[in-house]
Image (cartoon, rainbow over all chains, first blue to last red; front, side, top):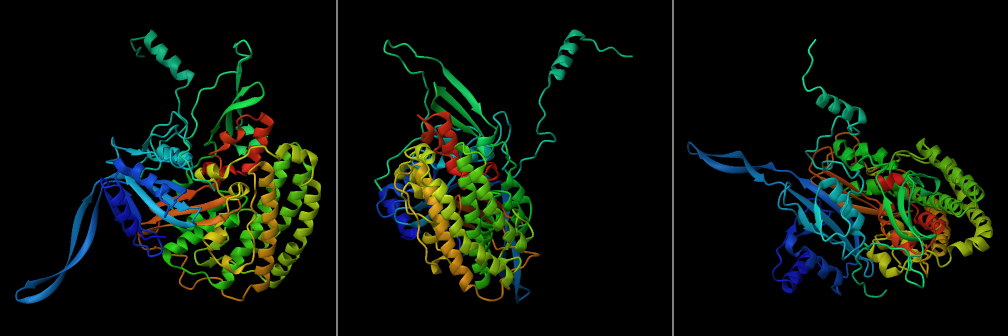
Length: 211
Length: 390
């Protein structure tokens, strides 16, 4: 299979408006990935599927990752002159990483038996810009997995034909796989008829009777 | 394989059939099958809309066994998830262990020694044998052959579970593999017992097949039912026997050659029509190939050691990075996607469940058939709800 750089170069040639980045992977045995902006994600995926040299006809794995806002601390060594003597000091540089959600697709080719090409898309933030294009119209194998990502991370897949919660129940509030999710004390709390009766009773006796 | 066209999933409204005068012939009946129904293989529900006896709409409902395995794994150490992988597909704990161990070995750069690789292959193929055997039992049970084929299957499965118990201490929840090797060694008596079982398994399959393969009822219920075209199967990420029954030659043991599978001589059985009968037949033939692999592995297994000396059980902190590792489980491609941030717990831990993804096309396969066929079609997918819902 071509290297990721070659694929990126061909993609930039074929789809000039796309913003593409290579995401490094510090693990030597793991694969680097191709970061695509959400606006051209669908076109890039379609290119990868239909290109005769790649033919990534098999979307193996779809998953979400939550990256909340954090400060990343990196230690840098620097040489300084202290009273005429050269000393090496260590400094910590803090950079702010804005929070976002990420969808990761692992694409393989069953016909040419190669892969994977790892495709990533990032949302704008974790609160209101959580839209990415759905790739289910290209690979139906993504249908249930995108529903799962929507269910557990709250990423909204535009163009998904049936975007409902998959594993949690329909009335469930919140997205349990997010890093900052706090589980409620009682998952199964629901207003019972008993509570309704109490509400009615309050309306019926507006003045609280004190003993 | 023909060129793949975009195949968007169906989303549609259904109406009753019309008679010659253009009047509806009857009413649609919506039934909720499950979650407590013996033929759904666990707590799984299908919302089926029937026109007469014909299935016109079918929506699977998931989540009754959901416990957010992935979230739990983010809170515990890497090794702490190993016993939990047993509970995913509780029929095939050995292959689940292997898939997870393989992924973490890729992440941490560990290489299992020769003997451990052989033991892993032996365990994985024994798992495949017992999974396919009991699946055929369940499949026949779904078809109405109550009890007998399943009991035959379970008799043989029990012998394999005895082997698992002898080596790991547990019949089903084996928790046997470790990062960089396996937990306990097998002795000569165990190998002799495994060899005896392997050599006798072909005879059992002959006996099983003599009852089933040419059986008139099985032929009538399975041939031409639930057909899946190859292009659609690929597009919907089908894996395992479901995919190969449709005629697509894609077996990770041959494609990825993970472990030491490149050393063994075996074939990949393929179906032609993609119907239920092909799925049954592919599984039977796969078992025969597994026997071949087992015989070769049990013959060639080398001596010690069974663990990579670099691997450590305590204080295991892999370097930051991400990996995706996958193996050919009995049900299909079982993958693990792990992101490490250098801490003792995984930052992200994801299971690619073959059982869930193979259900993507359940509706497409069932449309136009009767409820009794829908039961058999679901049976042929081979799901375990521990893995579907995680």
